[in-house]
Amino acid sequence: MTNDKHILRSEPGEETATPGTATVREGVLAVPGELKLHFGGKLDSVSIAWRLAGPAGAPVVVALGGISASRRVWLPDEPRGGWWHEVVGPGLALDTLRFRILSFDYLGASADSTGPRDGQVFPTVSAYDQAELLLRLINHLGISSVRAIAGASYGGMVALAFGERYPDRVARLLVISAADRAHPMASAWRVVQRRIVRFALEAGKPAQGLELARALAMATYRSAEEFSARFAGAARKVDEGFVLPVEEYLFARGAEYAQRYRPESFVCLSESIDLHRVDATRIFAPVTAVAVREDQLVPLGDMRAMVARLPNAELHELSSVYGHDAFLKENRHLKPIFANVLNEVSGPHT
Image (cartoon, rainbow, N blue to C red; front, side, top):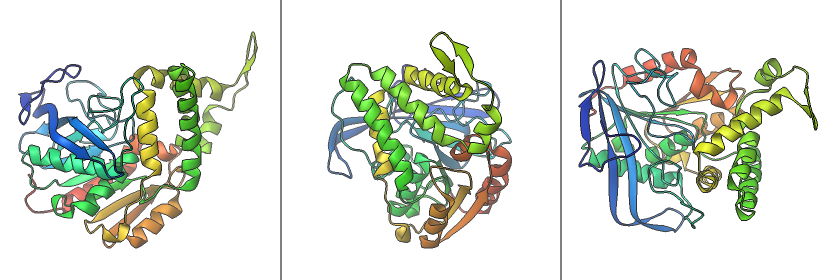
Protein backbone atom coordinates (compact mmCIF):
# COMPACT_ATOMS: atom_id res chain seq x y z
CA MET A 1 0.00 0.00 0.00
CA THR A 2 1.35 3.40 -0.91
CA ASN A 3 2.28 5.62 2.00
CA ASP A 4 -0.59 8.09 2.59
CA LYS A 5 1.79 10.98 3.15
CA HIS A 6 3.88 10.38 0.04
CA ILE A 7 1.67 8.96 -2.68
CA LEU A 8 3.37 7.27 -5.57
CA ARG A 9 1.97 7.74 -9.03
CA SER A 10 0.61 4.51 -10.37
CA GLU A 11 -0.96 3.18 -13.55
CA PRO A 12 -3.67 2.40 -12.67
CA GLY A 13 -2.74 1.85 -9.00
CA GLU A 14 -0.87 -0.36 -6.60
CA GLU A 15 -2.77 -3.15 -4.87
CA THR A 16 -1.74 -4.84 -1.66
CA ALA A 17 -3.43 -7.10 0.82
CA THR A 18 -4.46 -5.67 4.18
CA PRO A 19 -5.69 -7.48 7.31
CA GLY A 20 -8.78 -9.57 6.65
CA THR A 21 -10.06 -9.86 3.10
CA ALA A 22 -9.59 -6.24 2.07
CA THR A 23 -7.25 -4.97 -0.59
CA VAL A 24 -6.20 -1.38 -1.06
CA ARG A 25 -5.35 0.36 -4.31
CA GLU A 26 -4.16 3.91 -4.11
CA GLY A 27 -2.56 6.36 -6.46
CA VAL A 28 -2.65 9.70 -8.20
CA LEU A 29 -4.38 10.21 -11.53
CA ALA A 30 -2.56 12.75 -13.68
CA VAL A 31 -5.08 14.48 -15.96
CA PRO A 32 -3.28 15.34 -19.21
CA GLY A 33 -3.43 18.73 -20.84
CA GLU A 34 -5.71 21.58 -19.90
CA LEU A 35 -8.81 21.01 -17.76
CA LYS A 36 -11.63 23.41 -18.65
CA LEU A 37 -13.85 24.09 -15.65
CA HIS A 38 -17.61 24.58 -15.52
CA PHE A 39 -17.46 28.27 -14.60
CA GLY A 40 -14.91 29.14 -17.26
CA GLY A 41 -11.62 28.68 -15.46
CA LYS A 42 -8.78 26.49 -16.63
CA LEU A 43 -6.13 24.37 -14.93
CA ASP A 44 -3.04 22.66 -16.29
CA SER A 45 -1.54 19.40 -15.00
CA VAL A 46 -4.32 18.45 -12.60
CA SER A 47 -3.65 15.55 -10.24
CA ILE A 48 -6.35 13.63 -8.40
CA ALA A 49 -5.42 11.43 -5.42
CA TRP A 50 -7.66 8.38 -5.04
CA ARG A 51 -8.15 5.30 -2.90
CA LEU A 52 -10.06 2.03 -3.47
CA ALA A 53 -10.43 -0.33 -0.51
CA GLY A 54 -12.42 -3.53 0.03
CA PRO A 55 -12.68 -7.15 -1.06
CA ALA A 56 -11.01 -7.81 -4.39
CA GLY A 57 -13.56 -8.05 -7.18
CA ALA A 58 -16.48 -6.74 -5.09
CA PRO A 59 -18.89 -4.14 -6.55
CA VAL A 60 -17.69 -0.56 -6.24
CA VAL A 61 -19.48 2.12 -4.23
CA VAL A 62 -18.16 5.67 -4.41
CA ALA A 63 -18.26 7.41 -1.01
CA LEU A 64 -18.03 11.22 -0.88
CA GLY A 65 -18.41 13.57 2.07
CA GLY A 66 -18.25 17.24 2.96
CA ILE A 67 -15.63 19.71 1.78
CA SER A 68 -13.27 18.57 4.55
CA ALA A 69 -13.54 14.89 3.66
CA SER A 70 -10.69 13.06 1.96
CA ARG A 71 -10.14 9.82 0.08
CA ARG A 72 -9.52 8.11 3.44
CA VAL A 73 -13.13 7.03 3.94
CA TRP A 74 -12.34 3.72 5.61
CA LEU A 75 -8.91 2.51 6.72
CA PRO A 76 -9.10 -1.25 7.33
CA ASP A 77 -5.76 -1.38 9.10
CA GLU A 78 -6.61 1.31 11.65
CA PRO A 79 -9.24 1.06 14.41
CA ARG A 80 -11.87 3.77 13.85
CA GLY A 81 -9.83 4.79 10.83
CA GLY A 82 -11.23 7.05 8.12
CA TRP A 83 -13.55 10.04 8.27
CA TRP A 84 -16.72 7.89 7.79
CA HIS A 85 -15.69 5.08 10.15
CA GLU A 86 -19.01 5.12 12.06
CA VAL A 87 -20.97 4.31 8.88
CA VAL A 88 -18.48 2.58 6.57
CA GLY A 89 -16.87 -0.67 7.67
CA PRO A 90 -17.48 -4.38 8.21
CA GLY A 91 -21.17 -4.91 9.00
CA LEU A 92 -21.97 -1.19 9.00
CA ALA A 93 -24.37 0.73 6.76
CA LEU A 94 -21.89 0.66 3.89
CA ASP A 95 -20.59 -2.85 4.43
CA THR A 96 -16.96 -3.21 3.45
CA LEU A 97 -17.29 -6.99 3.52
CA ARG A 98 -19.50 -6.70 0.42
CA PHE A 99 -18.31 -3.59 -1.41
CA ARG A 100 -15.14 -1.83 -2.47
CA ILE A 101 -15.11 1.81 -1.42
CA LEU A 102 -13.76 4.33 -3.91
CA SER A 103 -13.09 7.96 -3.08
CA PHE A 104 -10.81 10.82 -4.05
CA ASP A 105 -9.49 14.08 -2.68
CA TYR A 106 -11.58 16.90 -4.14
CA LEU A 107 -10.17 19.32 -6.66
CA GLY A 108 -9.45 22.51 -4.72
CA ALA A 109 -9.33 20.78 -1.34
CA SER A 110 -6.58 20.70 1.25
CA ALA A 111 -5.33 17.15 0.68
CA ASP A 112 -3.26 15.64 -2.15
CA SER A 113 -5.25 16.56 -5.25
CA THR A 114 -4.60 19.82 -7.08
CA GLY A 115 -5.70 22.79 -5.02
CA PRO A 116 -4.78 26.34 -4.04
CA ARG A 117 -1.37 26.69 -2.45
CA ASP A 118 0.19 29.58 -0.53
CA GLY A 119 -2.35 32.21 -1.45
CA GLN A 120 -2.24 31.63 -5.20
CA VAL A 121 -5.24 32.50 -7.32
CA PHE A 122 -7.33 29.39 -7.96
CA PRO A 123 -10.30 29.18 -10.32
CA THR A 124 -13.86 28.64 -9.19
CA VAL A 125 -14.74 24.96 -8.89
CA SER A 126 -18.14 23.36 -9.51
CA ALA A 127 -19.63 20.06 -8.39
CA TYR A 128 -19.77 19.33 -12.13
CA ASP A 129 -15.97 19.56 -12.24
CA GLN A 130 -15.69 17.06 -9.37
CA ALA A 131 -18.11 14.78 -11.24
CA GLU A 132 -16.03 14.96 -14.41
CA LEU A 133 -12.90 14.03 -12.48
CA LEU A 134 -14.74 11.11 -10.88
CA LEU A 135 -15.67 9.92 -14.37
CA ARG A 136 -12.05 10.16 -15.49
CA LEU A 137 -11.03 8.22 -12.39
CA ILE A 138 -13.43 5.31 -12.93
CA ASN A 139 -12.38 5.20 -16.58
CA HIS A 140 -8.75 5.10 -15.46
CA LEU A 141 -9.55 2.19 -13.13
CA GLY A 142 -11.44 0.26 -15.82
CA ILE A 143 -14.77 0.44 -13.98
CA SER A 144 -17.69 0.26 -16.39
CA SER A 145 -20.34 1.28 -13.86
CA VAL A 146 -20.40 1.76 -10.10
CA ARG A 147 -23.01 0.13 -7.89
CA ALA A 148 -23.81 3.45 -6.23
CA ILE A 149 -22.49 6.86 -5.29
CA ALA A 150 -23.12 7.51 -1.62
CA GLY A 151 -22.70 11.25 -1.23
CA ALA A 152 -23.33 13.34 1.87
CA SER A 153 -23.31 17.13 2.14
CA TYR A 154 -21.01 18.41 -0.65
CA GLY A 155 -20.53 14.81 -1.73
CA GLY A 156 -24.27 14.58 -2.34
CA MET A 157 -24.03 17.60 -4.63
CA VAL A 158 -21.25 15.89 -6.56
CA ALA A 159 -23.35 12.73 -6.78
CA LEU A 160 -26.28 14.69 -8.23
CA ALA A 161 -24.00 16.39 -10.77
CA PHE A 162 -22.61 13.00 -11.78
CA GLY A 163 -26.12 11.55 -12.08
CA GLU A 164 -27.18 14.38 -14.38
CA ARG A 165 -24.14 14.16 -16.65
CA TYR A 166 -23.32 10.42 -16.62
CA PRO A 167 -26.42 8.39 -15.69
CA ASP A 168 -25.22 5.28 -17.52
CA ARG A 169 -22.16 4.99 -15.29
CA VAL A 170 -23.96 4.63 -11.94
CA ALA A 171 -26.78 2.32 -10.91
CA ARG A 172 -28.06 4.39 -7.97
CA LEU A 173 -27.42 7.66 -6.17
CA LEU A 174 -27.61 7.77 -2.38
CA VAL A 175 -27.83 11.46 -1.47
CA ILE A 176 -27.74 12.50 2.18
CA SER A 177 -28.33 16.07 3.34
CA ALA A 178 -27.78 17.59 -0.10
CA ALA A 179 -30.25 19.23 -2.48
CA ASP A 180 -30.14 20.40 -6.08
CA ARG A 181 -29.33 23.96 -4.98
CA ALA A 182 -28.04 25.72 -1.88
CA HIS A 183 -30.50 27.34 0.51
CA PRO A 184 -30.01 31.13 0.84
CA MET A 185 -29.89 30.97 4.65
CA ALA A 186 -27.12 28.39 4.56
CA SER A 187 -25.33 30.53 2.00
CA ALA A 188 -25.70 33.52 4.33
CA TRP A 189 -23.72 31.72 7.02
CA ARG A 190 -21.09 30.55 4.55
CA VAL A 191 -20.52 33.93 2.88
CA VAL A 192 -19.75 35.40 6.31
CA GLN A 193 -17.31 32.55 6.96
CA ARG A 194 -15.54 33.22 3.66
CA ARG A 195 -15.36 36.96 4.37
CA ILE A 196 -13.71 36.18 7.71
CA VAL A 197 -11.10 33.96 6.07
CA ARG A 198 -10.38 36.41 3.26
CA PHE A 199 -10.01 39.26 5.74
CA ALA A 200 -7.60 37.17 7.81
CA LEU A 201 -5.58 36.24 4.72
CA GLU A 202 -5.20 39.91 3.84
CA ALA A 203 -4.19 40.64 7.43
CA GLY A 204 -1.55 37.92 7.40
CA LYS A 205 -3.37 35.78 9.96
CA PRO A 206 -4.82 32.93 7.88
CA ALA A 207 -4.97 30.31 10.65
CA GLN A 208 -6.80 32.63 13.03
CA GLY A 209 -9.33 33.48 10.35
CA LEU A 210 -9.98 29.86 9.54
CA GLU A 211 -10.38 29.10 13.26
CA LEU A 212 -13.09 31.77 13.53
CA ALA A 213 -14.85 30.64 10.35
CA ARG A 214 -14.84 27.00 11.40
CA ALA A 215 -16.17 27.91 14.85
CA LEU A 216 -19.09 29.69 13.19
CA ALA A 217 -19.62 26.75 10.85
CA MET A 218 -19.71 24.30 13.78
CA ALA A 219 -22.69 26.20 15.17
CA THR A 220 -24.65 25.30 12.02
CA TYR A 221 -23.79 21.61 11.76
CA ARG A 222 -25.62 20.30 14.82
CA SER A 223 -29.08 20.83 16.28
CA ALA A 224 -30.33 23.21 18.97
CA GLU A 225 -31.40 20.15 20.96
CA GLU A 226 -27.87 18.78 21.08
CA PHE A 227 -26.36 22.12 22.08
CA SER A 228 -28.96 22.50 24.82
CA ALA A 229 -28.11 19.08 26.23
CA ARG A 230 -24.34 19.49 26.01
CA PHE A 231 -23.63 23.15 26.75
CA ALA A 232 -26.24 24.42 29.19
CA GLY A 233 -23.76 24.57 32.07
CA ALA A 234 -22.50 27.70 33.78
CA ALA A 235 -19.78 29.89 32.35
CA ARG A 236 -16.23 29.45 33.62
CA LYS A 237 -14.46 32.45 35.19
CA VAL A 238 -11.15 33.39 33.61
CA ASP A 239 -8.87 36.38 34.10
CA GLU A 240 -10.43 38.45 31.35
CA GLY A 241 -14.04 37.53 32.08
CA PHE A 242 -16.09 34.41 31.42
CA VAL A 243 -15.96 31.56 28.91
CA LEU A 244 -19.15 29.72 27.99
CA PRO A 245 -19.11 25.92 27.58
CA VAL A 246 -20.30 26.24 23.98
CA GLU A 247 -17.54 28.81 23.36
CA GLU A 248 -14.85 26.39 24.48
CA TYR A 249 -16.27 23.69 22.22
CA LEU A 250 -16.57 25.86 19.11
CA PHE A 251 -13.11 27.36 19.30
CA ALA A 252 -11.43 24.09 20.22
CA ARG A 253 -12.90 22.58 17.06
CA GLY A 254 -11.95 25.67 15.08
CA ALA A 255 -8.34 25.57 16.26
CA GLU A 256 -8.08 21.87 15.49
CA TYR A 257 -9.42 22.43 11.99
CA ALA A 258 -7.08 25.33 11.29
CA GLN A 259 -4.10 23.07 11.96
CA ARG A 260 -5.01 20.62 9.22
CA TYR A 261 -6.85 22.56 6.50
CA ARG A 262 -5.78 25.33 4.13
CA PRO A 263 -7.78 28.57 4.33
CA GLU A 264 -7.71 28.97 0.54
CA SER A 265 -9.22 25.51 0.11
CA PHE A 266 -11.96 26.30 2.60
CA VAL A 267 -12.89 29.40 0.61
CA CYS A 268 -12.75 27.51 -2.71
CA LEU A 269 -15.05 24.65 -1.76
CA SER A 270 -17.36 26.69 0.45
CA GLU A 271 -18.02 28.86 -2.61
CA SER A 272 -18.53 25.72 -4.69
CA ILE A 273 -21.36 24.71 -2.36
CA ASP A 274 -23.13 28.05 -2.75
CA LEU A 275 -22.79 28.04 -6.53
CA HIS A 276 -24.21 24.53 -6.74
CA ARG A 277 -27.26 24.21 -8.95
CA VAL A 278 -28.16 21.13 -10.97
CA ASP A 279 -31.25 20.43 -13.07
CA ALA A 280 -33.11 17.81 -11.05
CA THR A 281 -35.48 17.10 -13.94
CA ARG A 282 -32.51 15.82 -15.97
CA ILE A 283 -31.17 13.40 -13.36
CA PHE A 284 -32.46 10.08 -14.65
CA ALA A 285 -30.31 7.85 -12.46
CA PRO A 286 -32.45 6.50 -9.58
CA VAL A 287 -32.00 8.59 -6.44
CA THR A 288 -32.54 7.64 -2.82
CA ALA A 289 -32.45 10.86 -0.80
CA VAL A 290 -32.09 11.06 2.97
CA ALA A 291 -33.20 14.21 4.79
CA VAL A 292 -32.66 15.09 8.43
CA ARG A 293 -35.46 17.12 9.99
CA GLU A 294 -33.05 18.97 12.30
CA ASP A 295 -30.63 19.89 9.49
CA GLN A 296 -30.11 23.67 9.54
CA LEU A 297 -28.09 23.76 6.32
CA VAL A 298 -30.28 21.64 4.05
CA PRO A 299 -33.89 22.14 5.17
CA LEU A 300 -36.37 19.31 4.86
CA GLY A 301 -38.49 21.42 2.50
CA ASP A 302 -35.61 21.70 0.04
CA MET A 303 -35.11 17.93 0.03
CA ARG A 304 -38.82 17.32 -0.52
CA ALA A 305 -38.91 19.85 -3.36
CA MET A 306 -35.88 18.27 -5.04
CA VAL A 307 -37.35 14.77 -4.83
CA ALA A 308 -40.57 16.08 -6.38
CA ARG A 309 -38.53 17.34 -9.36
CA LEU A 310 -36.47 14.20 -9.79
CA PRO A 311 -37.82 11.71 -12.37
CA ASN A 312 -37.00 8.61 -10.29
CA ALA A 313 -36.53 9.22 -6.59
CA GLU A 314 -37.57 8.30 -3.09
CA LEU A 315 -37.12 10.25 0.15
CA HIS A 316 -36.34 8.95 3.61
CA GLU A 317 -36.79 11.38 6.50
CA LEU A 318 -35.12 10.88 9.85
CA SER A 319 -34.65 12.81 13.07
CA SER A 320 -31.27 13.26 14.69
CA VAL A 321 -29.82 15.61 17.29
CA TYR A 322 -26.71 15.63 15.11
CA GLY A 323 -28.48 17.75 12.48
CA HIS A 324 -26.43 18.13 9.30
CA ASP A 325 -23.73 15.91 10.80
CA ALA A 326 -26.16 12.98 11.09
CA PHE A 327 -24.54 11.36 8.05
CA LEU A 328 -21.37 10.94 10.13
CA LYS A 329 -23.09 9.44 13.15
CA GLU A 330 -26.38 7.71 12.44
CA ASN A 331 -25.34 4.24 11.32
CA ARG A 332 -28.46 2.79 13.00
CA HIS A 333 -30.78 4.92 10.85
CA LEU A 334 -28.74 4.68 7.67
CA LYS A 335 -28.03 0.96 7.71
CA PRO A 336 -31.52 -0.24 6.61
CA ILE A 337 -31.68 2.48 3.94
CA PHE A 338 -28.30 1.56 2.53
CA ALA A 339 -29.13 -2.15 2.69
CA ASN A 340 -32.39 -1.75 0.77
CA VAL A 341 -30.81 0.42 -1.90
CA LEU A 342 -27.67 -1.63 -2.44
CA ASN A 343 -29.43 -4.98 -2.31
CA GLU A 344 -32.02 -4.04 -4.94
CA VAL A 345 -29.43 -2.97 -7.48
CA SER A 346 -28.73 -5.84 -9.83
CA GLY A 347 -26.67 -6.41 -12.91
CA PRO A 348 -22.93 -6.27 -13.60
CA HIS A 349 -21.15 -3.40 -11.89
CA THR A 350 -17.41 -3.79 -11.90
